[in-house]
Figure 1 (cartoon, rainbow, N blue to C red):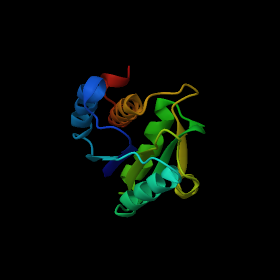
Figure 2 (cartoon, rainbow, N blue to C red):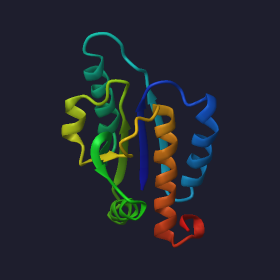
Figure 3 (tube, rainbow, N blue to C red):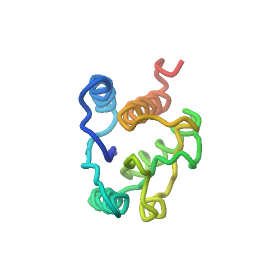
Length: 150
């Protein structure tokens, strides 16, 4: 299984960089992980251009597309693990998209098989990357029956 975390925004250094690196390394035991950070656009139609870039990056994969969206479905860690497990068992890849400051373009939301909400709080994009990676690691540990989730 290959995981693709596609995000719009600043590089992953700074305060959250070490956490991204840590969870990326942990996830590497379970799946191939690609972190792709796309440049944030500005001006009219920025959200649409960002959406096109996300869809182009996803188009190179053979799996599902999930869009992080505050209006999406909230999942427990166990529910997330079950969804990830089904994809893993069917040898499908997963691309997760974190949009820019204005959210996702309509085209990304329409193409997504799941709109996943991390909750009602607004998170900085760099923190959202950490939360997504940690939850994916937790999902794989749940599937493995490991002690991390307890």
